[in-house]
Length: 93
Image 1 (cartoon, rainbow, N blue to C red):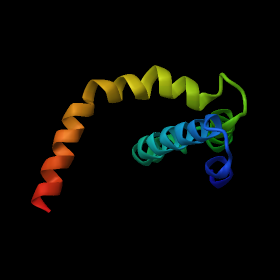
Image 2 (image 1 turned 45 degrees about the horizontal axis):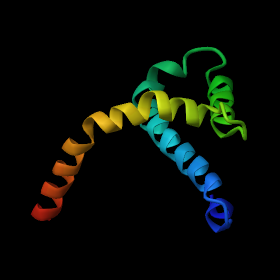
Image 3 (image 1 turned 180 degrees about the horizontal axis):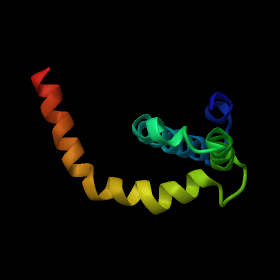
């Protein structure tokens, strides 16, 4: 990520920031589902393959696919509510 930030190209910055957004959402979802999923055979191998797919240097990598098909539409649908909630929290703090 630091190499992407320090490079002159903006494209790799977007790619890695997209990866970290997808990874963050994955970690939140996994914290709730890990109690059940670790019982499945090859769960950790599948998790590793999923994360490799998410950071693969190809245009159809998992981060781009998941961000544009699931995370971005959900964010665009609810971003005003989140902004209002965050501004209310910051004024109370």
